[in-house]
Length: 123
Image (cartoon, rainbow, N blue to C red; front, side, top):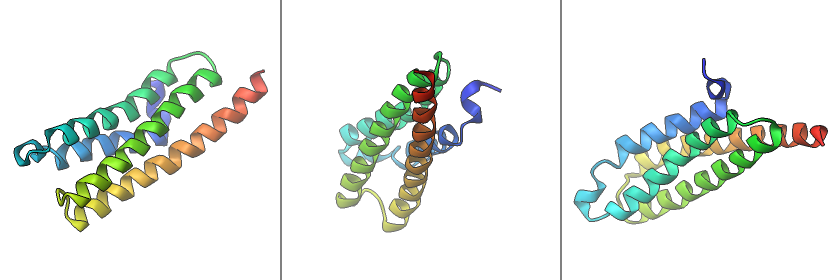
């Protein structure tokens, strides 16, 4: 098992990434390729930063990468709002993907706080 695989935050971010890739695969045909690729980039970044941060030494470095992950999750939230308003997502699709994103954000935030406390102890 890779170090990152033990984190529920990574599992949820990975699930979000895969779900978004499946959901948005046809958006460029509708003239929204830019939005699709921006969401793809952020969706890739979220789990990838947990992967990278888990290989660094110490809680302070992991915390920095989790901070970036939280930013990517916020960016995804905005991208989904735009996609919903442009009617690229049905209400049901939006609800399903937003539930995954919200869970990923909540769990990542909890991990960030836990790691932050550990980093303070390391000082």
